[in-house]
Image (cartoon, rainbow, N blue to C red; front, side, top):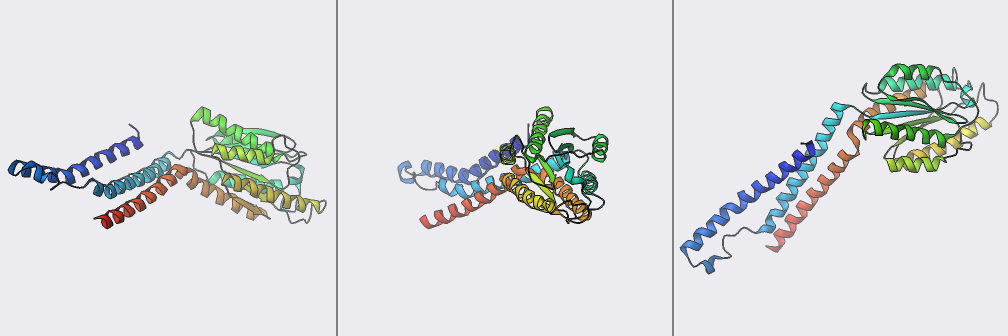
Length: 310
């Protein structure tokens, strides 16, 4: 029997015990009075009013929701299973050296720091995008292939952010089909604007929202110094930053930015620690907590109404 079913069964038993404990003595007293006196004269005497059971039953339901919420937190923290796909921009602009030693090298170091922060049981995949999107590593808990792929990234022309995100979502769907409907997230890094994706970034974001997959975005904003061929590089980053922030907002993720290798590594380490917690807790636990609060308020209101009608 599942944990949820056990909690529901416990709630039903608790309600029955409550009813018996409160109604039973009154009912027995009524039967004694009926035997001793005229039954018609004691019909309405000694009977517990059913409406007074509403507040404690609602409170019991709130308690059950709290047990479900914290039970899910405990179970999912023990399992430590989730899927994270990194989507990394490998366009030619990532070769610029305004971020030392280069944007690409900084991204590679940050990606490795991110992976190191995730629990061992997390399945991590890698998607790259430039002129086309490519699944480099399918999600796996084996870090060896992933680390090699991160250090072997090369650049080419184009920045198809929408197609990159779409490929990351395809990878998550395939992983869920093979391993179950686990929590998942995408961490997408880019330093520029979209340049003609077949799947627009907005369409990909809507799909991620429908799948319940938050997209955490990181825009790498170079200083525009050594290695930047023209002012358009910083302008592209500004446009891309607005797009990436929109992707995160649509999917209930978060958006970050970095201007140096140190900042980028710090962002990825923060993301790794945050996802280790957020994905383990999951959205259903929050739903049970909210329902528990609503039931508690309903119990208080019911008690207030009953007291005024007495």
